[in-house]
Image (tube, rainbow, N blue to C red; front, top):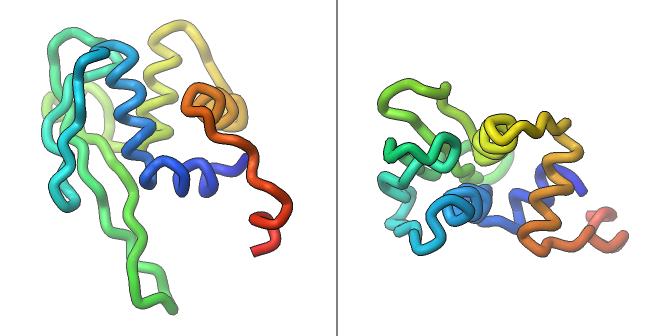
Length: 124
């Protein structure tokens, strides 16, 4: 499983951030309006602080439509801004698990019930 495939199956990372938040705050539902996901509870420390989640536009040379990636921002600066995988890395690290990127991707895929792509998808 690749990072790109995982992100493509999780609304470019929004579902990963939502999953981490719901692990700590089971009743929370993220509201998405355009590229803004608003302020959400912090899943890493779960101490009542907030994070801001948005979809950043990433222009790709040679393509008319840009890609979007979910990003988080801590207004109080507890963590540097990053993408969904950076937040997941911090989340699991805070719980005593230091995962490699491959282990992190496999863990998230398992928790989000995302199956390995078939060989047909790999040929594209």
